[in-house]
Image (cartoon, rainbow, N blue to C red):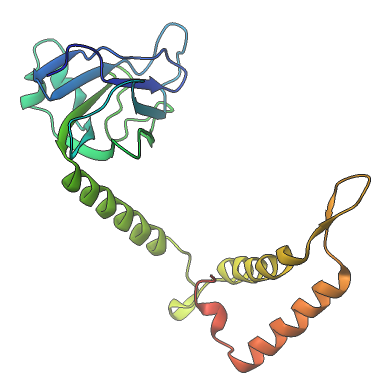
Length: 218
């Protein structure tokens, strides 16, 4: 399928990569990226993937992006892609021509990273609807994990840290609509009476609904 490079891969701190290391089939591309280079001895943590200028994927298709969970399988003597387990990272395609992924790095062997062997990125041209559905599933999983990591106090109630954050967020949401700038300095300011008005309404809300801070703020 490909007679010219389709994708650009840019590991943080490393040169741009456009040529795949191998092509298992005409719609699959593998990129072996070293974790460290002579000019950048620190393992990279972020990777940008994008469609190269002038490239258009086949209609109703998108590029699914994966990272190998056992990149050592691609080392000399390894079994290659047949032995590697890949984790879905996301996708690029029409309407979303680029994406940035956090892979780990910093010397730790997180999913798909290894200071010695590097990182193997797989890109497959797949059905756009399937790629979109898996991206949505990833987003839902990420939201669920974020909610699970919210620190809780006793009896499952929000901790003092969470309550403080929600009070600040409530104040910011209210006050931001009344901010203005000083003419000479351009510094953004909020009139004191507006803050007093927020506090009055906040106290009223607490009295009418003492549990409202237990819910995430809009």
